[in-house]
Image (cartoon, rainbow, N blue to C red; front, side, top):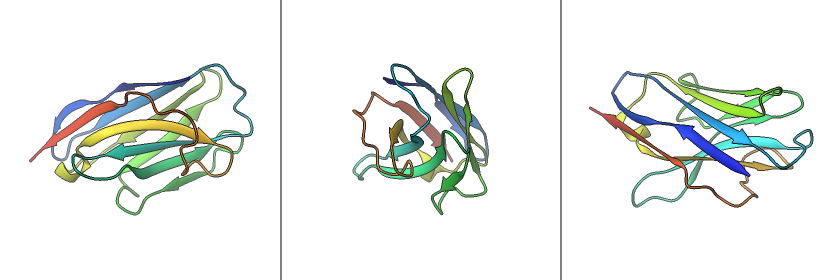
Length: 118
C-alpha cells in the first residue's frame, strides 16, 4: 500500500515536500517513483529512486529542482520540490515497480494536490 502526504499551495519559486509511506511488502527489489497528472493531461513520470541502491532518475522538466530520497528505516519516499513553477501544478502520486520506478505497476492511490500560483 502506498499513501501520499504533503502537498498544498505555494507561490512560484517556493518549496514543498511530499512523502509516500509504504507498507505491506519487501522493497529491496523495487524502485519507487513519483508521478503527476495535471488537469486535462496524462499522468507523467517525475522522479524515481531504487530502493536498494538509492540511484535516482529525474524527468528533464524537474531535474535540478526536485530531489527524491528514500528512508529505509521509516519506509518512506520523499520528494523535495524547490523552485516550483505554475506548470508543476498537478496531483502527485507515488508508485513502485520492479524495473526502474518509471512504470507505476501498483494500484494508484488518491495522490496529493500541489498548486503553484504565479
